[in-house]
Structures are given as C-alpha cells and as structure tokens.
Amino acid sequence: MAESGDTTGKVLYKDDTHTYIWLGGENKYRKGVIQTMQYLIIDNGRGTLLDPGGVHLFPKVVAAVSRFIAIDKIDTIFFSHQDPDVSSGIALWLGITNAKVYISALWTRFLPHFGIVDTTRIIPIDDRGGSAKLASGAEVRFIPSHFMHSPGQFALWDARSKILFTGDIGAAVFGDGEETVFVDDFSKHVHLIEDFHRRYMASNAVVRKWCTQVSRLNPTMIAPQHGAIYRNESVTAFLDWLSALRCGTDLADQIFGF
Amino acid sequence: MAESGDTTGKVLYKDDTHTYIWLGGENKYRKGVIQTMQYLIIDNGRGTLLDPGGVHLFPKVVAAVSRFIAIDKIDTIFFSHQDPDVSSGIALWLGITNAKVYISALWTRFLPHFGIVDTTRIIPIDDRGGSAKLASGAEVRFIPSHFMHSPGQFALWDARSKILFTGDIGAAVFGDGEETVFVDDFSKHVHLIEDFHRRYMASNAVVRKWCTQVSRLNPTMIAPQHGAIYRNESVTAFLDWLSALRCGTDLADQIFGF
Image (cartoon, rainbow over all chains, first blue to last red; front, top):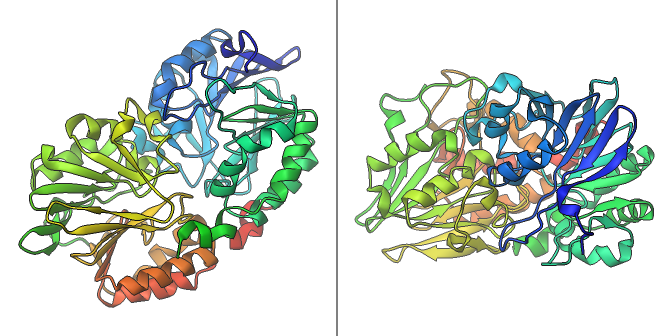
C-alpha cells in the first residue's frame, strides 16, 4: 500500500542544485489501463521530464510538475522508447514548453505520427548512447537498453543522484490496492514482475549483457516507469534476478505456438 | 516511381464478395517522417482496415477509405502492433465507427494512453494467434510475428485473396521519388530493406521460424505497412533473404557498444 500523500510526489534525491522527484503514481486503479509513473529532475532551476506519458495523462502530469517548477522551465524531455504510454503526449508537451526531446534514433521519424510535431526539436540518440549536460554541469547519460523491450530503448543515468531511470525495465503490474512506492524486499516483489519480463524482454543474452553494464554504475535506485522503485538491497537483487531470466525469443516455441 | 494515379488506391484482389485494396501511399515525401501505407478489405459490403495509422494521417485515410466504402461500414480494425504510425489514431477511428479493434493481448492496456478509448471494443489476440470471420464467411488469420520488431506483433492472413499483411515486416525506406507500388525485382529492392530489418528484427532464430511458417501459406502477395508490395517471385525471394538474415540481438555487441 502506498504511504499517505505519495500520489502527490516524493523527492528521491536533493542537493544544493539538483533534485530528483518521483511525480507520483495514479491513486486510482483504472480497469484495463496500465498505470505509469513520471519523474522530474530539477537542476539549477531547469526541468528534465522522464517518460511524461500519453495524451491520456497529460493534465495530471502538468499539474504534478507545476507543484515543483513552472512548466516553461522544462527544457529537456527524455523518452525511453516509442510506446503510447511513454510518448503519445509529445505534441502537447512541445506545445506548452520549448523543450528538446531525446529519443533513440530509431524512433525520431515515427514520433510525428502522434500529431503535429516540430521535428527540429527531436534529438536522436545513437545506438551506443551519449549524454546531455544539465544547467549546473551535472551530466545525464543514455544507457543502451535495446530490445528490452523496444529495439531502440535507453535508460537514463543521472550521475549526481546515482538513480537509473529504466523505462519498462523493472516494471511491475500491481493489482488494485497493492501499490508500493519502493521495493524493499525483492522476494515479495518478484511475482509482480515475472510475467512481464519473461514475455516482453527479447532474450537472456541481451538482459544479461545489460545487467553487467548497469551493475558497474552501482545505482542507489532503479526507477522504472511502472510499478515501484528499487532501492538498497533490492537493486542488486533485481539485477541478479534479471541476469538469470530466460525470456522472449528464448521461449519462442512456447510463444509462437509453431 | 509510382505509376500514375497510384496515390488514390489500387485493387489488389477482387471476387464477387471480397476486395482487397491498397489505399495508396503518401504522394509527397515529408522530411523526417516515415511514410506509411494502409489497406482495406471489403467483404460483403463491410470493411476491415489494416494499420490505419496515426493522428497525423487520419484525415487522409478517412478520405481514401470513403472512395470505396461508407466509413460507418468499417466494423473491424486490425493493428499489427503498438507503434505510433500504426495505432495512434485509435481514439479518432473509434469515434467515427462502431468497429472492434484487434491487437496483441500485450498491448490492450497500453492503447488507452493514446486518448479516450472504450476498452470494451478492443479484442486481445492471444500469443499463438487466432482468426476472425468476415461477413461472407471468409476468414482472416492472425499469424504470430512476435519480436519482428514488437514483442507482441501479428501479421494478417486473408485466406481468400492469399495476401499476407505484415506490418513492419518487409518494410522499405524509400528516398524521395524512389517509390514503387510493387517489388518485381527483389535484387533491386534489397538495399532499401536491409538496414531496417537488420536493426529492428530481434534475431535470426525468430525471423527464420516465421519465414518457415509463412512459406507454407504460399502467399500471392506480402503487403507491408511501409515501402512496396512483394508479388510473384519477389515473395519467395524476400522470405529466402529474411530467413538468412543475422539481425537485432545477434549483433548486440555492435549495437550496444558494450
């Protein structure tokens, strides 16, 4: 169960110039719609939004952001991949901010299909990743996460807070009333993530490679777009579990049925 | 170069009760936006739309459809997968038709993020596929095509016309003025499809498995959502080429850079 007040957001990290905020989950389970979480980094008074979500959630996310920063101070938007729940609000966000949008180069030509989009504001991320400097000089890095699940997918590593935002990686699907903000006991959480990762992640070879790389960053938290935030021991427990998972094309015979 | 008049649509198959129509490509190349093609099956006077596309193209596709059938006679919409260029117009299409939407069960909970969507009109397709009966009794089958590229993806087999609609599989990316409607000489087409398939398709194991299954259907045409339609010898040539392709996670070391 979420702690009281959690749906209005929670500061995950804060120093003099840099704040990492979980903008809250949806406090009401809506039947048949996957729940999402959004994050905001405020660095020297400028905002970076992570997977701000679809058309569907736009009013809610605008309101949540505005509790922390004026909307026109958002100058960076990061999309981990191309899915509707991640990025279908792009035309709305470009309309109310001057932000640049970072997304895998695989998807820049697909985004305009969401509506009227100024393509000069979309910055393609090369397959092998890259980085962006924030206002204070702090750096965020784009960590290749391809085929987990999207062919062009990135996690975002915030070196200052040591929080890794992972998009769909680590996603949990809660039942009504089961929501928690943090994962503190991984053994109690694993049943909420098992089916999703087994089916959507492309193969063990890929997830293992990713986990090895991510472990070297030594994140204090892993923050996915759905479910709950891994912290303390649950970070390592999650990476160990994912490294060993047979998934996706490893199970093609079962999944395809031919 | 497309033949004259091709942008207004072309009948690919016709018998007394069943017509398969290519609704046309975009006749003007728009910089930075991937071009798409839509298809319409009319069966006993009722319409089935295949990957009708995003918000961006909605007015154009409505106009194209209306040259062949009244919009309110569309009772089935098929989405091969969840990408913006395929399905982001869902709320608009549900608004002007009473159609049911078929899509992989993996994506039914993501579609409402495109906007206000009545989830009772979305029919999930199970991993191993399935079929739907059209008005005349003709059957369309959903052929599992997972991880090509989407984790939950289907092709649509129209047994009457023997045309296989494949979504992104077979997609070509044309330069300005290079468009053709059909692929008649595969050796001249391969350079337009190579980079896309190598990068977006998940692995050789998966594409090979799919090609074996699809070859057994013996399609007269393979109709993708981007590029050109394979017919005659180019159908087999494409399947032979794809079967042998190393792609996606096979090339993880190159793609990830770690």
